[in-house]
Length: 428
Image (tube, rainbow, N blue to C red; front, side, top):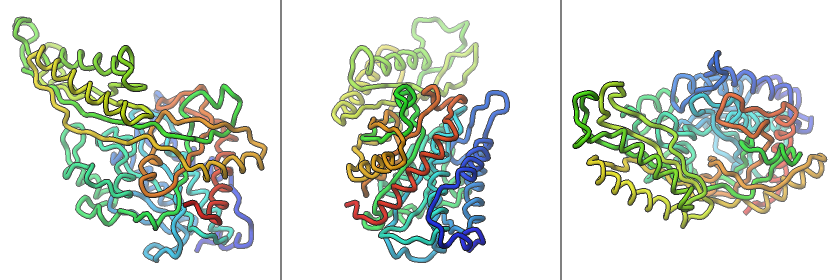
């Protein structure tokens, strides 16, 4: 056990704001583009591995035990690695991976705040009904490998939802990068948690929207999380010379993709089949200015809080894509699907968060999450709750993503107090 833990055995748990902010700043430099300020730490990329190594180093330096499961999830606890948990886990965390050119707080703040809570609990030597643990889930964003929520999906046992051999957008296998992260694609079953092994899951996150800032509230108590369907669509045509191939008879994959993008947009626009629908990525081959594209891969991201609407939007998209294929002479195939259903958070845990805000004199409000989070996956096996802190300007997934340092510290304090109270009362 480290000296820092031993010296604070009798002290009550408290957030060390300076320590938290130092870690946020340090982690925010990993994968940072010096020109734009954007953070690129795609899941299983070299930058992601560097971020993972930093968190592991910080946890071990604090005298905490660190383990990595077969899915690459990092688990931090006070008890030595390998020892059997005597109490169900009170799990807290988020993810370290980012989108391309994203912000420094999305996911990362949740991991570092959870680490701070576990360290504060270890330093105090307190014991409750549940054992506080921090987790950094792998590949939440799915930016490089289009299997978002990979780590949390494995933890809850959604193994059948994952491809047997996951591939990135270029067709490269996950097997090697997962091994570099300390995981093992052939042993994912060993990373599955039984429902009785985890009492609850708490996740703190930047809001990624403008509501808290506009209303003057410092804490958001999330009452529900949107559902999300991600489809990877492959459009296959025929390559040809841009100058010598007549327009009639062309099988232009990119022209077909342009129609597909419009179809996706209309699902949430003119047709109102889901709340939002987005094409966020296009991979074009051969991607040459004077060549007709023969293959395009795109991602369609559909979100809604009603499962039936999500299913209807997906069905409508597939039907429309078949019509686009017929009209353009191309072949269009949905090659990958990821589903995360909408979930409601635990009323009991929400009440604890609100109680802590009142005790601290921190203004709060209830609100839904329009973004997806690992919490909605972990809800398969345990009650979940989410705490939001304000996003300056309401922006996220961009270099300008930011939150006031004082709000980051207050959010971690609310998380700590919620964890302490939840550790002494049943949550089921």
